[in-house]
Image (cartoon, rainbow, N blue to C red; front, top):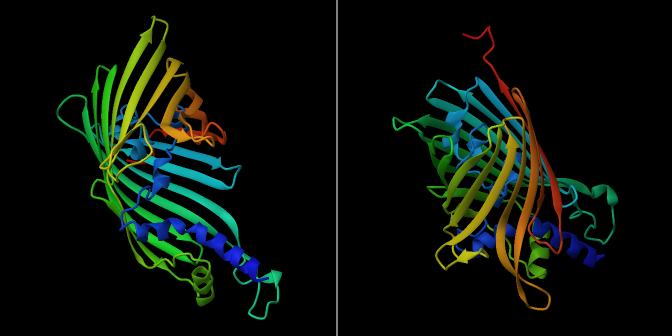
Length: 368
């Protein structure tokens, strides 16, 4: 009986162990708010998240807010749903972008990454050792982000800037929750629709999450007896990340066929990560995406990301990549995109299907 209680409490502990880790890593842990690095939009996921330079629709609020200036409709709407680990984790996105005038655009993005219906067995066994299955409840471990974006074209032709103010809410049932705030900034420069360059600065001022824990005495006692650290209220910082991108479009003949290529370099400032280029101060993660298409109607995409060396069971190092493929269809003001991605470990091959929609709406006649 008691072992069952220890086990259930230990499972609960792992739901927010990432927060306890933040306390041991001096407020600024690696991979803080990492759910915001997954990416949104099947069009971008299909090219390995290499999208900072070419993004130019409602999804730019996430990728690079400067790209919102290329939204030329009264309202651009984007939605996405994906699932990970055989449907255990669900990831959803909604984006809105409104063209204010020919030079400026505002946008809003909402993201949710969560594991729902987690059994809570902390009250399954009472102090007398009796089991009461009616005491089993469920909870969610969910991360939310809300981005408010603004972008504007500058006087230099092809140059745009944009920024995000973001609110982050993370919750683990009734046990822990946090609120956070941060700023992003982006810039894009376009030359003749062939060359595009972009820079995205995420968490440019560092984003903080203020955590509050509400653990009962029984849970604290089990944590202590099992050697787990009891998390305390505190502040978690997400250090800045800079993403540099370059894009090139090639026309394949005169029939409307084309090829695009973009390469991005993610420079994180939270110390050494398991990336292709790393140091004790920063790490650089490159990713590449290509696409082939016909006019604006159809595009086939492929990309590689998460390039890193991993150690096998035989203690040998091998190069590992995260592949992705995708396809997109566009009919007038309606776009449907699909991507097939892996989480990065070729030996496990946990693939996910991602579908996203985008609808461009003209200004209604009854609105002046």
